[in-house]
Image (cartoon, rainbow, N blue to C red; front, side):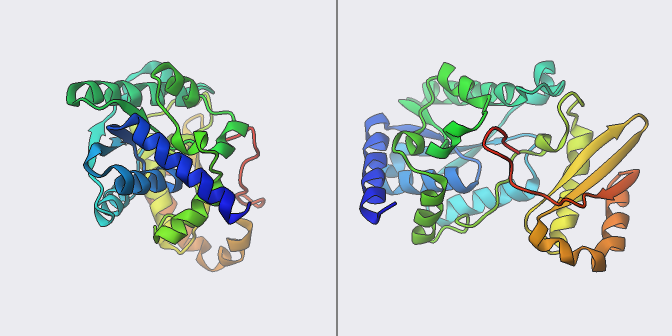
Length: 272
């Protein structure tokens, strides 16, 4: 992709933001929404508001980091509590769980936008996401939520490079879907399970790993943690294995297993 092509996409992005202003942005602190927030701040200023959905599926550290980033770029950001865990359709953890999460989020954002006079809601879907199965996209369509990054044609690689140019700390951040994604479909999502996952992943992160997952496996009366670490980081597992296992047991897991295949980025039809 040439620089001129990327620049043209950024110009289209600016136009889309102006066209739909004043604008509420669904902001998570991830690569895409952080870039969208930063650009919207530069283009719209006070005519834009970032809103973070807070629930047990969002790690406390991720929330703090997202708020810190918004403050560092001068963007207004607020937190709204979402209650997807109270919806049995979400908590039962079907394959389209993310639809119910996004529907809850957009319900809250739609009410906020109407109350405060914002013209539209935007979220951070990019052009590459169209190759992936994303149940939340249906909720976005139903609530007429716009996706300026996608509609401008910006890919994930371009967003990362543009984020570097803006000095955003998210430029090289790994993907971090919500904690519920660590629970296999069909296993109920509970606040207790999410808290265990959060404690477990905080431990793994404290040991210096960057790309990983702690999968939450409920097997009868036993709850096991399956740790997946990126292949390029697996050679560092052995020296910390005892600490890792002990820490995960302290986090509430009855057993711990290390996935010998490690963690690999999902294919185009997956999203975890």
